[in-house]
Amino acid sequence: MPFESPAASKTLLDGVDFSDAVAVAQDCRDAFDADDARPGNRDPSRCKALLRFKDGTVFWSSKMAIDADGPAAGPGRLSGSQLDPSNGEGQDRTAYQFPEGGPSLSSEIVPYAVLPGGTFREQTGLALGDVVIVIFGNKMAGALAGDTGPAKKIGEGSIRLHELLHPPAPDPCARRDANGFCQRILDASIGEDVLFFAFPGSALSSGIDQSNAESVTAARAAELIAALKKPAG
Image 1 (tube, rainbow, N blue to C red):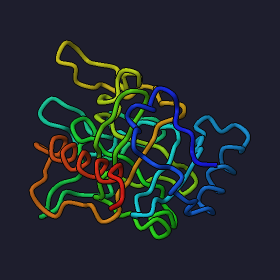
Image 2: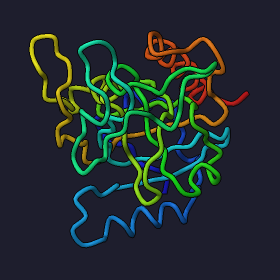
Image 3: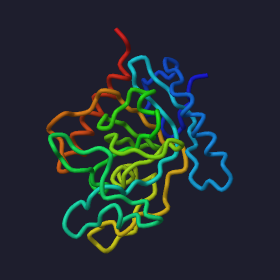
């Protein structure tokens, strides 16, 4: 049976033919499911599909937790280790850095998604820096594949990615004051039905940095999803 999209997202998915998509990275999917069943797991992936389209686009449906990793977004802002101090999970760098010697991605200003570790990238053909489209409810946002996470979990995104999907996504941050800067991330993960379309080989080799990443990625993401929806021939 083809993947059945959530009712709230159907309009955004008009033209996407899931009947052309086939299962990919099945052992990764099995690992996500097995970890979900682990007693006491408070952060299940809820991966409902992991598919590849004929053109190579990789799709999954899952939860989306908050990744605060990366340097501070600017003066008066906090770094990843300060935004997510619990159990030392927050880091001040991301696995991907901007091209041409650029820095790590700041979670507060760069929309990025997280790829699972292990063999996920090898099996899907995805690489850090590839463009991702993320849909939740009636909102859609472009993102970069900007960080890596545990091999047994899927579904995580930056603070800025959560903000672009809010609402219906919850606000990811406790705010310091009227300037709206994030003081710390909240336990505000989206529990399920976040839809990710990731495009292998789509990474930008130049012309992107912290200052324009959101707009440049959004424009490239719009082109890629339009091509996916375009009828063959």
